[in-house]
Image 1: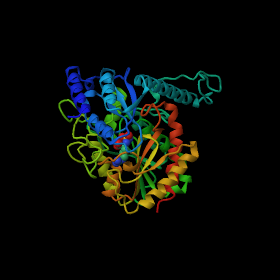
Image 2: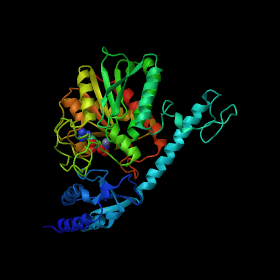
Image 3: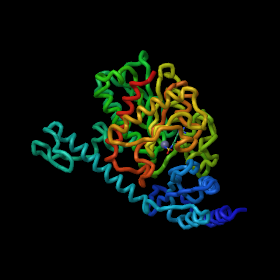
Image 4: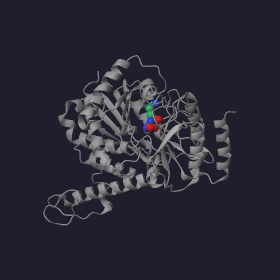
Length: 454
Ligand code: 0X9
Ligand code: ZN
């Protein structure tokens, strides 16, 4: 037995005696560190793969271990197991750096930024009938009246630029559809495991035009993704009719693809990723981006129900993936493109996610993706990386966009990893001030690629 493995086993026995970290309720992240590792040898990568399956340590790989080549691997580590973790890393001679001392402080900053964004929205709304708000950090409307912010009325007001709750997003979809003069309608495509409505906004007429599907928030904790899609929906509602590249399609937009997980990430655990269906005596949830019927259970998955990349017992074991599958199957003859928004790393992921093989139309996939990348760059100068996950990220099977292309036959299928970039030290937890810049760059990309599909 190698020394690294022996130390790992001893550490696990020690950790097993203490209270398991995954059982915490209303989980906080005080003194959780984000540690960036730079493995250089295959042995080190193999060791990290074993570590990734060691759920007892309570560590959370923000970047999976089979990230190829020279990339960093970021891991959130609880204070309780930090010393054990570092000992394991040092025994295996892996270079590391602590890039965040306290993940809870990131969460707190994000919460404050979101409260501020919500308050600004409400003040702006409160002033609308009185001659407009004076702007950021002001409590007055332009006519001198006080702008009163009450948090009760955000649901049907504009939520653009905020991290809204699932109920608020659903209420907003209903409200914008009602005000759209028939341009948009809401369709409930089913309920989740917990009974939440999954609402899709359809923009444009049904039944005749080719169509494009966009979803966000398959992973619960990737809040920038639903917020970016809400921004894009808002832009569509004002620009669809005047932009030929938009109005030649009917668009189906699902801002929260995993509502149970998304709500749980708001109420109980900011870093929750999976669904919320019970999987074993101790562990809850399936990775909904491993739950699709495309190379199910192969690369980038774990058979441990406690793992963040547990694919479930069978393809489409989850209600949320079933509902999307059924809707897409019902519309697949008209669907030209499938887009799925995730975070983070600023990547434009092309098919396939499951392995290094390339689709026969890979050149066309890459052509359109590179045009999208250029459009993103034109907005805020962000330089996204284009490519297939096994080449630029890591192989992951059972993913939604692979299924959309392979099984539903949708020619253009992409996954986006939104802000921040892979070198950032805040990952999934970014201030609400990033929502509008993210929305603008992704909207530019979506418009561009819509004009290029053949
Ligand atoms: O691991 C994932 O599911 C995605 N990354 S994330 O950090 N958002 O979790 C990458 C998905 C790439 N797509 C597939 N491999 N299907
Ligand atoms: Zn994701």
